[in-house]
Picture (cartoon, rainbow, N blue to C red):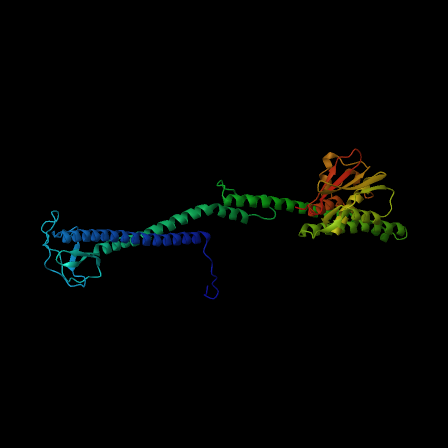
Length: 446
């Protein structure tokens, strides 16, 4: 692969984590080493300063008392001079070494230059017969530099093995922590649309990776359910579309084969009825597809009572007697077209199953607009109260072509209710079916 076509691949999470951990430890070692060396040098220098100050005090007392000059430390050198810097040699008390430093000759050095490696302290004291005398004490700091240099070398020698150990431990720990991720990736790679029943292995650690695996499994479960529902929907839609097409095709083929025997007005009427049913089915399918893929609906303030009256007024006259009980000022946040479709579907369902009358009630209670539609038909058995909202679901009494619809009306109504943060369910009723829709009043949306 040439340099022009080579694609730079970023480091893996394991490598980045190892590099970051090693860099952090390296910076921490540098900072800690600098602090330790600085602290060591400060403590040693402070100790030398204490010795020099103590030596100055002892020397000053000895000069004032006319006593010999004792030595506090063998490494300390004392110089005596006038305040203007002229070395003094007489008349001064003779130097006498202390008992713990036998054999040490006079350590008073006159006019000795101060070297950069020396630590120096001085003081001026009055001496009888001499006036003011400048006492200077200094000590060699080479030992301090040797100690700090040795400590620095030790840190420099110990740092690389320590960083290698940190890198190795981080690499191992990161690999062990990411091992479940690799298992999840491998299992996820084996997923197909035909095999959505597989689930990700959930580690028993209870950490973020375990929660990720649990979330993926929940998502897969929803995806599997949605795929199964979609496949069932496609199968049912294909069946429902094939039935009216066959109903249209068969009479036309018979009439075309025997044109002299065909009753063309009857054939045309039947074909138009089947086409009407086919058109209604296709319209419901398109509406369901839009609802399934649509984002949140744009909800606006809407007078639900006025919308109920408008839908009822536009309906053609039937043999069913409608009783309308609508409260005033029932305002919800909704989509006018979709809510009108919900009300229409509920009214169509009641009209299809009612024997002679149906009731529409709208009230406001507990922060919700409650729309009740009750008919005096055969009702809905408790075992079918959930199934009646499934797509293409028909109860036994509604399977005939004369009375049955597309099987999508109530499913479409529930989907619209869900998009409005509302509920649609079958309520108890002494006779007939009782469908209840509860929508949040304006200002009560979550």
